Amino acid sequence: HGGFAVYVPEHYDDRRAWPLVVALHGGSGNGRDFLWTWVRDAKRAGCLLVAPTAVGATWGDVDELGLLEILAWARSRYHVAPDRVLLTGLSDGATFTLVYGLAHPDVFRALAPCCGVWHPANFANGNLERARGVPIYLVHGAEDFLFPLALAHLTRDTLAAAGADLVYREIPDLSHTYPRGENPAILDWFGALPPRT
Image 1 (cartoon, rainbow, N blue to C red):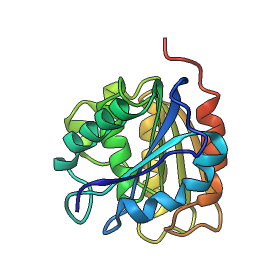
Image 2: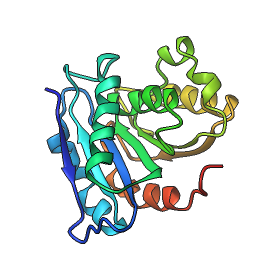
Image 3: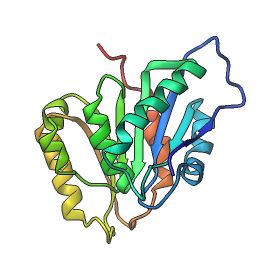
Image 4: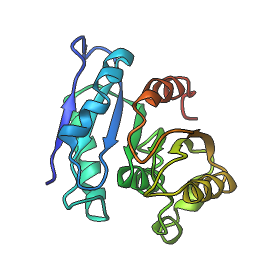
């Protein structure tokens, strides 16, 4: 456990800054496998890709510092656009996309949690107040058996009330699994975001 997998586009050129997608796996997963949910789309869009692995069976407080260290490593090794870092994830990875991403809005330009929920830690750590204006692309399956739709609606409504710049996508036939078909839309949405002011 721990560590991370990296994808660098074959046409990578250090003379320009590149967007970076940071993808967090679901519970009991690992970055090496989860990387493949994004490689094709990262290649198409011209993005660097990092997929960390949680220290334990799933994400928690212990992983937050490690995630920032991985980002520091990526920035030291590759020409990462400072205003183009997207944090995304599946299930527990989506839940902690909100926890980590809202805690560090200066690090992540946007968040794209898929099939995750609002964690109570977000109230205790001040994330609710930091959510205002943060671009968030929230995806959930209407047939999700692990995180029922009511929890997705609670997450959506909590973020909207906090003033997040929210896109909510509910996929009718999707269960609790990664919506790979959303990747191009997420990357197009991310690419169209204006520079941070």
